[in-house]
Amino acid sequence: MKKHIIANIKMNQTPEESKFYLASIISKASALVDKRLTICLPYTSLNLGKMMLSGTDITLGAQNIAEEEEGLLTGEISGRMLKGCGVKRVIVGHSERRSRFKESGQAINKKIKIALKNGLQVILCVGESLVEKNTLKTVASLTAQIDECLKGLYENELENIIIAYEPVWAIGSGKTASVKDIEYGVKAIRKAVENNFSEKAGKEIEVVYGGSLNGKNITSIYNAEGLNGVLVGGACLDAQAFLRMISKC
Ligand code: 13P
Image (cartoon, rainbow, N blue to C red; front, side):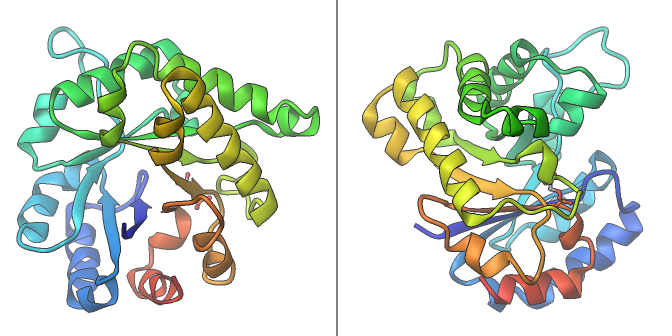
C-alpha cells in the first residue's frame, strides 16, 4: 500500500495563493507516483481545489467539519457542503481545535460519524500533551482519546479512517518526536484500536505522524516502523520546499 503524505495548510493562503501553490505541486506530479498526497486546504480555497485537482492523483482534503448535518450553526461548514466542494478527506480533532475551540472527544466522535455518513474519509488527530509525556501518561492519553473518538463505530468503518499521531508538544514547536517516541505512540494507538475492535483492526488501521516535520527529519520518520505516512504542517507551505521534502520520502 502506498504511504500517505498529507499537507495541512491550516489558516494560510487566499484562493489566489492556493492557485499558485497547487499549480506548482501539480506540475511536479511525477514526484508522487509511489505516494498518496492529500492537500487539506482552507474552506475558501476548496472549490478552486476541486477544479484544479480533478483528473490528478492528488486528494482534496478539508480541515474541519460541523458536528451536525445542518441548521442554526452560523459560520459552520457541514459534511454535505464539503462533499459539494469535492472534498474526499477531512481532518477531525486537530489539537489546535481541541485546545483553542474546546472541541471535546464527544464532539469529535459526532464529527467522525457525520463525516462518514457523508462519504468522507476521516483523518483523526490524537496526541499527548507535554505534561502527559513527562508524567508517563502518553499511553493513557492516547488510549482515552481513541476510546472516546471511535465510540460506537463499526469495525468496517475503520477503512475510512486514518489516525494521525500528533504529539501536542511537537506541533509547530520545532521539537520533533524521535523515531522511538513515534513507534511507541503508534503502538499504543494500534493497541487501543485492537481493544475497541479486533486484532485485525489494530494491525490494519492506517496511522500517520505529524509534528515539526522538515526536510531533515522526513526520511527517517517516513520509514518508521508501523507508520503509514506523514501529516505535514508548516513545512508544506512553500511548494518548492515541500516538493523537495517529498522527494526524500
Ligand atoms: P507542524 O508540521 O507545523 O508542526 O504542524 C503539524 C500539524 O499540526 C499538522 O496537522
